[in-house]
Image (cartoon, rainbow, N blue to C red; front, side, top):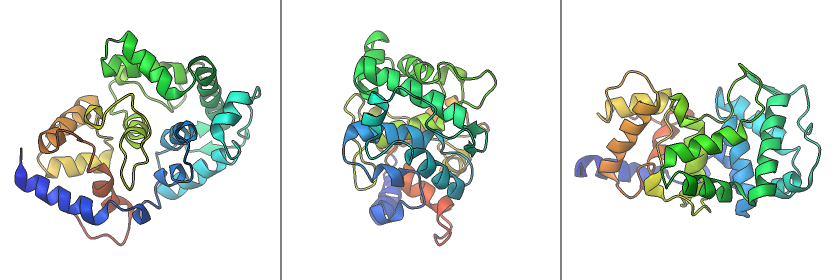
Length: 255
């Protein structure tokens, strides 16, 4: 273990891992809910739209959630119509039709398996505990009926991308501290893969955790392995604090 690097990162964690520093971040919306059944639906919506400018992300997530009433879980479970997101909705490459398809698929999973967590647990049982094959099935079911060539709201490891939004969703639901709400027990923090975007990729390269030029799945795994050497029990522990420096204008330069 790199004790000096862990001491540096833990210092950042203790200073910046605070709930008041969440906004602006789509994680903000999860903190409005207490029931894990609602949290997983809100997390799915928020993570699926977590691309592009953060101000637009916040507006888009808020617009979709406003269609799902006070309990997104109960709404999806009991609603037979899935044109709830207006056809005029647009978030970069994502349309109202795309969001309605995702919500319809989520509702079908809820009715058959009870919760998204329950479904992922069944996927893990089928895969013999192998996470990536389980996530391929999980993501595939949420993407069923997606228009050919449309932007994927839920990516799958088999496609080779960094799956940043999928791993962000899992981090929110699995980790539990002052920032991440947690609630899921189907995975442990040590199972998580670090959500890697261009900002995290750049930081990881400066920290010497990867030399890979492309922020793909192999890169995300390599970065996670690097953080796992520092913090074996929770490799995604430092994701929030490290990404604050690219989101909040008043933060100093990190590296």
